[in-house]
Length: 209
Image (cartoon, rainbow, N blue to C red; front, side, top):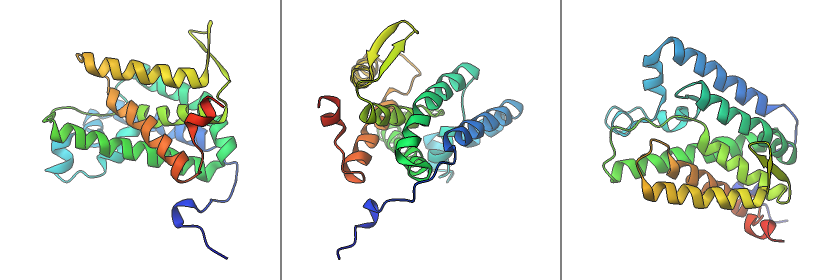
């Protein structure tokens, strides 16, 4: 009997409400960084601090720090609505692996992008890269689910992912914003690869099946 390669071995299914644990962790870190702003500097990802000062934890910890309450709420609402459903499909252990791996890879991708483009003074923070990955996962499992933009405009989940992709690309081209558009796109990209390589599911085919 041929054993599966390690990157395709499934994790045991369980329901541990990992989404709520992640939300709680993000809220805890936000409270701590609010009380101590220097802590946010250590957790956010800055190319100079990461490479020259050896703060190699930053491409991991950036995804638990947020710039303000609005930033936190936007990401946590997305994580709540989409993450709970994706966790139910994958199981808590697989969901945690998916969330952390896509978020960390998006962080290292952003680090490389900032470093090689000379964007040294940026401080990247927020769970958006991982949340965008979760959105793509939700759309893969439920491509025809309706998501109501502003609570009134119904959009299919698969169409929303494609729309967000176009918006992020155009916003990156226009520039002039402190939003990490490439980190969002990296979240989509690594989530897509995760499904293809590990789960052997093609999201694109699911979107238009």
